[in-house]
Amino acid sequence: MTEHLIKKYPNRRLYDTQTSKYIKLTDLKDLIVSGAYIKVIDSGTEEDITRAILMQIIMETENSGEPMFSSAMLQQVIRFYGSSLQGVFAKYMEESMLLFCRQQDELKESFGSDPLSAMAKATQKNMEMWTNFQNSFFSAGTSSKDTDPEKS
Image (cartoon, rainbow, N blue to C red; front, side, top):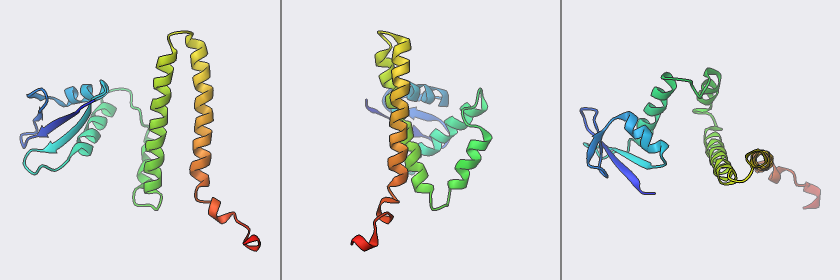
């Protein structure tokens, strides 16, 4: 899928260069939900401000309906900023999201035949993959410490 280049102008307007029209933040959210990849740049500085715009969409979505993130969860995330685990946590969250999305895609493909059976299989496979992912993720740092110095 192609990347939508969005330019943000000083008047806070967003311009979709692919469709050659101004869009609202809700339109941008709809593009993302439909599967489009976006890149937002500041029209004056050419700075990539995609993350800031995505955070703005998340914040507005969280405030306008049923929130996805609890206060407790957000506080835990904030505690990772600046800690030695910030990079590890970010990678863990990214890999977890990719795994979850892959599972959702597989479930959608399987739904055609027997929905209940497909859900049961996907749940079991997801649990196995999740356990394997966690075991490999958390054991990566300990494997070098587990060697017996007398056998060296």
